[in-house]
Length: 242
Image 1 (cartoon, one colour):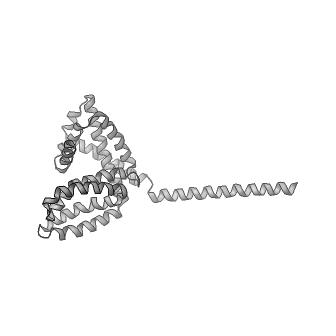
Image 2 (image 1 turned 180 degrees about the horizontal axis):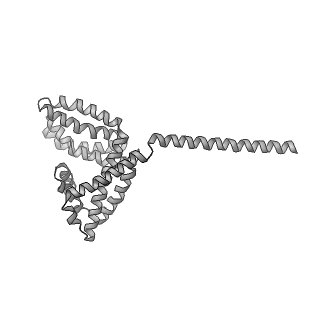
């Protein structure tokens, strides 16, 4: 549990070396699983069902990292820790039930927080709420694009961190690579861009998939009707011939 909390703290900071050092806490088999999961997310994670794999931990991370700050700014510092735990569980469950809601929160909460900081502590809520609702709604409208980009980013990071963990277990230059965190981040960025471009530009959208399934079902039904008509006509011709 301490390692789990420390991992969240690493990603709450703005220190890239802390983000990369997470691989040192993974056993080699977890690194291999992270690579496999990352590859799946990189190219297929933006789908309606697959994005839940991202939405659940993303919701937990948002609940754990962001909601304490919101509670403190709203004047409830004593309840920040309880809010943190409750929201982490609630947001992860929300991610499993409705991934688009997580997109709403993921876009709206940071924007609302920045707007609240801009207007100052006295009117923080007045700055937070409009920005939260407006940007969250825009994010939900662009859910397909954002889910593809988010899943590609998460998948790329899983691939890189998992690879470093596996290399470290094999004793192959993982520590040397981790000494250049910006290089690791740049590599992950290249993977993320490739995955996002594939998901948005190459993979068909959910609407296109549904249209294709409908057309295939219609073609199958027409073929069945044609075969049934030919069968009836052949039966009629045989009776007439006899």
